[in-house]
Length: 389
Ligand SMILES: Cc1cc2nc3c(=O)[nH]c(=O)nc-3n(C[C@H](O)[C@H](O)[C@H](O)COP(=O)(O)OP(=O)(O)OC[C@H]3O[C@@H](n4cnc5c(N)ncnc54)[C@H](O)[C@@H]3O)c2cc1C
Image (cartoon, rainbow, N blue to C red):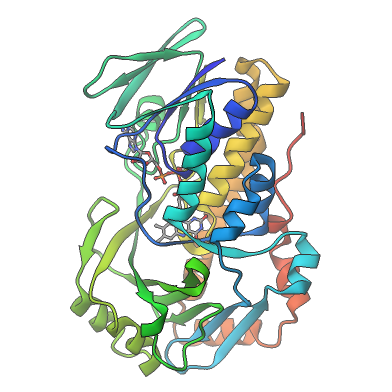
């Protein structure tokens, strides 16, 4: 089949590669003038390593990733450790896969090189999709400023503000969470003493948190500081105000503030998601990744889910004609991605709890055995599951 992919992010490139590996001819259309990923770190659960295995990208991803020792939650106000989930041998034995962290650019670069090297993938930049039309077995993809393209299948992987979703569902703008994320990277040599360098650490406080973890084999520290704010603006690449961040974190522990003070240049994101819903398929058009099921990042799974979608869609196309494959894809994915969307919101509340709720959180998590923590995540990390071809 001749497939069209709108958007060349992690989901779009993953889908292009998965389809090309199964013999389809794929054209990707990316709005930006080059294929690249902005932003810093991505956490990789065991579930996405199963997708890397199937795409043949495991070794390359692992060569660029770092394996943290543990996921740790600390109190941003009093400094005590709330809970710790070890990620070493026991975790790997339980899930058969590692937990890793990687630079977004590195992850996207691995997918991009695999697509560039594949004879059945055509990559187009500087082409902003605007909508689509269908006629019989043919889909026409339209652009703001270029001649239309035609194919037998269209995948809308154009992210949170998807134009393909708008054309398909017309269900308006995403839901603004009221949470803002400031992101930056710090050379590891500049990380203050006393800060863990080989773990994913989340400092949780009322209506805020700071996460940090190592990137690029420990050369960099990735920082994401989140706080509640009514501010609203679109986009992925805006300059954050360090003074505003400092005000929100003024009551946190000195080690938390010391990390934030080392950063001069922040980028910020207004975090949005949507209610889970069905209806990501229209004839020969399917949504994928954030276009289908945007989620808050509190489970660190958006990119992981986009790659699961990509493999699922390719598998369904191998088993059914396209008219049946796309609904089967949505059916196989909607409850899993809806669960991640829903639980990500809940995790945000748990991280940002105040007063008695924070005490309750700490009491519930205190003394939890690693095995209990792993079992709590098994619904996510044991997956994904769908009928194999
Ligand atoms: C603060 C933060 C931390 C996160 N941490 C993690 C994490 O640890 N782990 C994880 O798995 N996920 C994480 N995520 C989520 C993850 O970034 C997204 O879920 C993931 O990038 C979605 O991939 P996608 O390909 O669907 O969309 P995108 O990455 O948004 O890609 C969409 C692509 O489409 C292009 N595009 C947009 N409009 C058009 C158009 N009109 N025409 C053509 N092209 C277009 C864009 O330029 C882009 O290249 C995080 C997100 C945030 C905000």
